[in-house]
View (cartoon, rainbow, N blue to C red):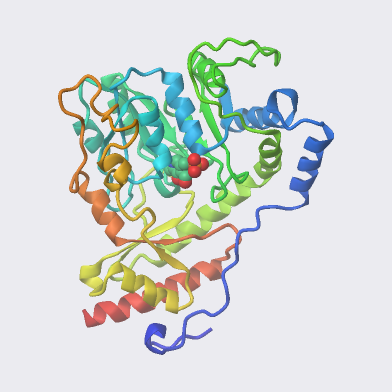
Length: 416
Ligand SMILES: Cc1ncc(COP(=O)(O)O)c(C=O)c1O
């Protein structure tokens, strides 16, 4: 549809009136997989075939020794941290730009989340900021490949090895995404994935933790089921080796994942192609910043983040989003809205009753968080708009997005 230059929000013709394609993740293959679960007369993973099959195929896909399925991405990170067996009060450095599922397990393992800052244009942890936050209590780093772009794992692994730190890669948004040819999740000590509804590979809710380390792999497999051990010939041995949560995946989730795995390469490949094209199309638009690309990193575009610079555009991020939406483009605002440490649970250390534990474990003063702790994370959240593109979009869809964003941005910048 031809658009006139008058903005739709001011009564002009919108760039687009047709709706954008929604995800359609399920088909007859999923139904067939689910039928097989019912046929086997059990949805309990140790007695069935599907979760084992999913774990085996995920290990093969990632070329790695161990994959432990669980109930969510949060659980997968908890399992990864549980495998590390950290001490109360140990510090884990991570990002303030993520789902709370990255951070809650740190506290549940009695450890203290320490937030480093991100790159303004990437929203991914900056290696130098990680380095600055290391103390004698630091034991691990959880790196999030934010939005689906791989972090600079060479720099992060160099820092980790120098300071003898474990690295967990939170790959919830970066399924099948490579850093210099290596899959994210296989570079650090452990990788953890959310398989929740919005993710590239999904089963409604689920998670998986991977590692190539024999000890970590064995401990993860036991940690996921309250210390019970099913690992040898599926024989249940009631070890209760240590206290741990119960995050067993059911066969229903495993079955869906077996069929969804068939689509994963296509989903990730399509998003990479569309997202990279949109980065090109948005390159020279004033006041609009598509994701800054890291050399050597693939980007799987779980979502497509755009920063709107209010100074150049002369309007706020919210006003910009509203004007683009009026053009028929589903541009959302803000993602989590504020850095994780500004939410009450972390700001006021709300975890175990009225205590400050674990933030005060072995310290005179508890670790605290405050506005200004990670300025680039705070600024990027103020500026962020998010496009939830998906694998059913076409090149035409991203062209319409670019046209509408360009139309609004140029008109606003000219008046600013
Ligand atoms: C980067 C990241 N980590 C962790 C999680 C938590 O995953 P779940 O909701 O499956 O527990 C999410 C969920 O969106 C995420 O995006």
